Length: 409
Image (cartoon, rainbow, N blue to C red; front, side, top):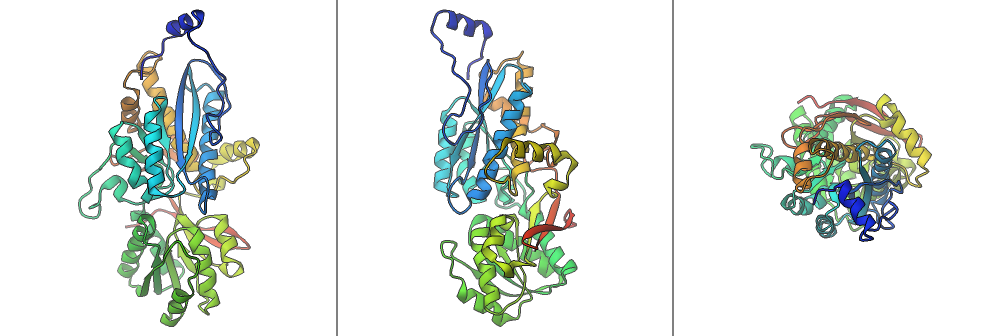
């Protein structure tokens, strides 16, 4: 990316060789309509904007859009106007990889927020890393993304351009196990997962901690995430005498699974990770879902003094969709990119250098600020230093915080 010079731009305008256009949405999935002069920097967004997981994906997109609008309104980076470019990955790794290639091809893109799914991230990381394009996920929790496939025995960071503001399943799974065993007093669990990167990994870390605590795994099962008929596994759960079910996966399957387990006669709670922490889970699970549990990253956004402005501004913008579980983390992911761009511009006499992508990636490692979700910073693996987690329970048709804290390993 070439340096932008005010003199060069002025000369080009005078010669009629350059036309300035209003800074609006780049396409129908974009968001920011803030205008301003100078350099344009695009922040990409990759998330499922259609399909079963679109509630979470649209919350991610809207929250990034809000960050961009705020940065432009407050002129956070002098001479830079931010825009977003949002692409739909439909929760599919192949689509995510195609989107990553599109972002890389656009020289104005200096950072990407997303994706939602860890399996999608696996398909995108190398594409971004080869191009020195920074990626910050608000939602990926699989430990291998930052610490390598052998993270349990030998941590090694595979890609220097990948960061995340969400904590990992190495913490989330055991945190849930400790709550289920120590607080909920459940001793016999049936473990189910959807065989995908996120779900299987989360179920594995939960199971290891639950057994370590003295709990008994009375059965395991893998389900096909493309079906909604779980009657066979529901009957199997009932026959084992389990007093709790742990599900590694996402809400489109978890809701019907919970409902069918209760219908089979097993009046026991279903517990899952942040992938089921959505209002849509409650709708899908029905009245029998009362008492079901989910862990999610961070503390409840609504209870954080640091999030009050975000919540108020999100409401004021009139977004049709809720910010959902990852709204605050998406805003902070975008703001981390904005802070990195600011650092690079300030270090280069107010202009973007030729190697802007590489320098933004390097700057991200040292970014730290007080964000919506608390202090935002990254460790040597690109993981969030904020390890806060919360257990939520379905109560009166909504999610209610049951316990917040950190995993005591």
